[in-house]
Image 1 (cartoon, rainbow, N blue to C red):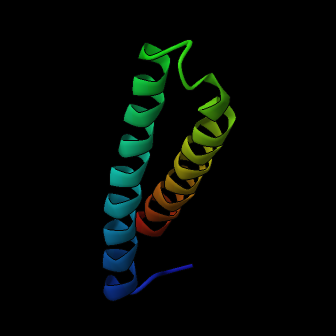
Image 2 (image 1 turned 120 degrees about the vertical axis):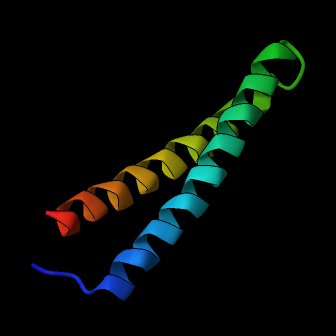
Length: 69
């Protein structure tokens, strides 16, 4: 499956946006861990958001690699 240049650039832009979000959530999780035991009840929410962000980022990166082949 070939992807046109515009669609590939859109995926790259999406990857950058998702990467920034994933990094932000990673830092939020790190900050939460540093503040333990305060805020421990937020762990599932922040961890789930980080997991979903990295999952979405991984999927987009795989699409970019596939489209570049």
